[in-house]
Length: 214
Image (cartoon, rainbow, N blue to C red; front, side):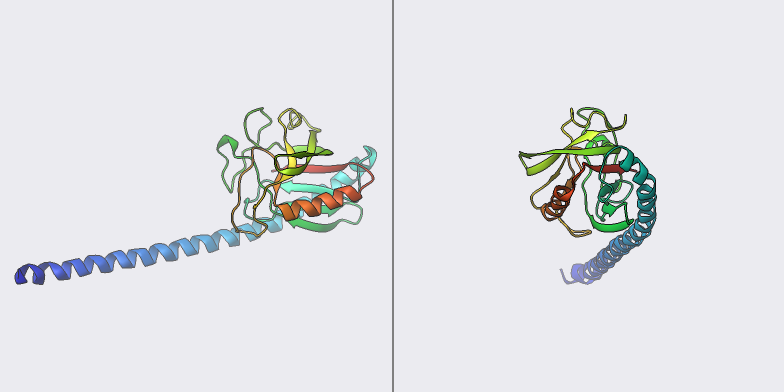
């Protein structure tokens, strides 16, 4: 028995050491991967902000010509990771960023946290790109929401698909926070974020537009 212990105990200890080293390495790799992701997201957010600015500049004349608010516009960049703030509230008149929030995209089409698959097809559970007129408010399963009217061929099924702007109970407001849920295709905000958006919409005399793009 003593000989068995003498032979196999060092082997067992070596195996445990190797497993421990492997776990430490895996933990460091996971941490590095998370850190690298945040660095990449920061870079993409910088590009996204420039893209949003381009939308502000290009949309201002169109908003005015079509009778929409020119002091409030929402733009959502679905090319960004869902863990970062990509729903912008902007003022086209003075080109200022008013606020930014996390926003969920649809779970359909194989969408992941960092890849929103976009579709206008009924039943797809995908978010649709394009310009939306924010319509009447209503009270639904998630409280107050706004009906969305798709203005482009890429989102003209929005009303039929019941794609709306709404909040979802404990959806996080923090970047890389939790819980962070997918939607069924709706641009879905945290309750606190929606409350701010709602108050801004109510201040406008003209209809407000939301643009979703990727």
